Length: 214
Ligand SMILES: Cc1cc2nc3c(=O)[nH]c(=O)nc-3n(C[C@H](O)[C@H](O)[C@H](O)COP(=O)(O)O)c2cc1C
Image (cartoon, rainbow, N blue to C red; front, side, top):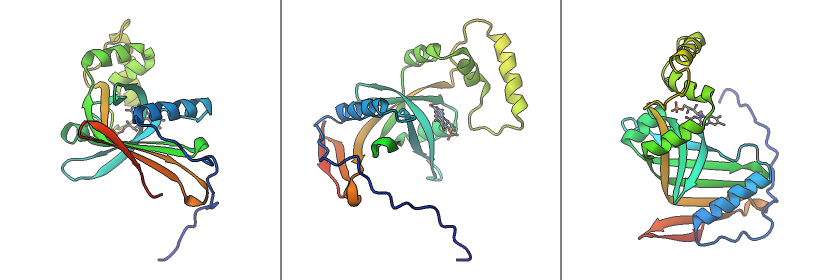
């Protein structure tokens, strides 16, 4: 190795989870409990999570942040451009993973499962609730395509502003996906690297849970 860049390493210990974490039977109840706590404790971006997809041909994995917008029944919903890289991956390979990291609480949640588009009417309803500028941007941005210059995007936006002087309809290439999980893992940092990991798996129509070594 010619050179090595040492990154700052504080050897941080985790201290928030200093009492045994108790996990209930239903992972969605646990998720809501932790999500509420992330809000109460003012985590900066509690809805932001990493979404990983795998491209079907090359099996290349890619991750990016999306906002979790809804948790309904047993599904995690986010919105995006169906023609984006993630959309192209998910069309052929619906297996995906979401990852939340809430550093203030020293917690992460790993969610794995199968993604499908939500019904168009539900995407319509959510799109309608968005600010006008975001609605126009959903039309203007060919998400994940190469962009020659930023001015192209701005001029498309201006043209769209005139094209839709009042209501902006939802672009057909934009909408929600729901991830139906088959595995959810809750991780609570604890002192001396003896962290709590509680893993939920959906097997034969019901959720089972067990702990894993940290
Ligand atoms: C905090 C944050 C929130 C984001 N939320 C979304 C989102 O909800 N939907 C989305 O399509 N992109 C969102 N993005 C942008 C994505 O990370 C990504 O750049 C974009 O979706 C293109 O990804 P792709 O080319 O892999 O498909 C967000 C980025 C950040 C940093």
